[in-house]
Amino acid sequence: MRNLERAGVSRSVAMKLTGHKTEAVYRRYAIVSSGDLRDAVRRLEDGYISGYTSAAAKHTSKRTAQKS
Image (tube, rainbow, N blue to C red):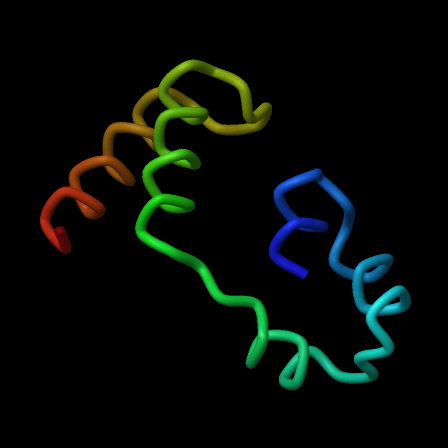
């Protein structure tokens, strides 16, 4: 699941591929590492993820830094 999400496969498609019928079960196994969070923040800051402003990236970056 983790690799599917990293590859940009939608959750609904990933659930079909893995045979998970509910979001709750899918989320149980969809582990997010601190590295995954850092990569997402970097992408936000670099503008790779459309629909997010740089202000959202900065806010997310601050929250991630505080948790580390």
